[in-house]
Image 1 (cartoon, one colour):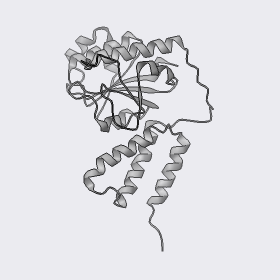
Image 2 (cartoon, rainbow, N blue to C red):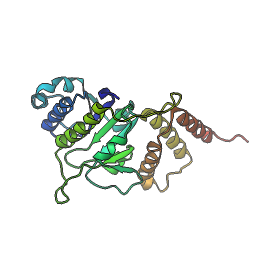
Image 3 (cartoon, one colour):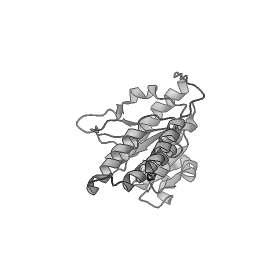
Image 4 (cartoon, rainbow, N blue to C red):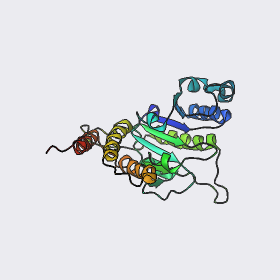
Length: 239
């Protein structure tokens, strides 16, 4: 288990102060990886650097992405944080459940924007959704506060090293990039046979497909097999 396996991903953060405070929280607990997707402020800027205080190195090393898919390419497991229960077939976990996560894998924690949180489409990329227990009368948490609670919990779990996982070294888990590539091939072939009908339902159909594949914990071999199947199905039959 390694602190270097953990990434904190901010999806469309709105405020420079929150970005800086998140970097500070990340460094407080010995983590180092900050990823941003379409930040609203210019990144980096003086306000971000000022509020990061002693964590300017986290800001300078941070990676910025234009879309959520590119940010997931090096991850094995994605945990989306949300204050709302989602009516989707996805595992909902609490802070206490984090001790069941295999932190020897590359884990990403996804945080939504301050204005609107995460949409169902963004959650569909996740293996789990995580809800921080708060008062039922007021669930809203500041972005950096949410991050620091999770960072402290994960840091304690890794430091104690009280989780032992045994698995065959021959089995290699598929990365998010592997699954995205397989899914893209599937969608392409489905489009060619006009599967997405009516057209206005296409986004939710793709969202549901993504949810299915992303939560299956597929191996690299399994994604190769499925990609071959989708490729064969996409070939035109010869008379």
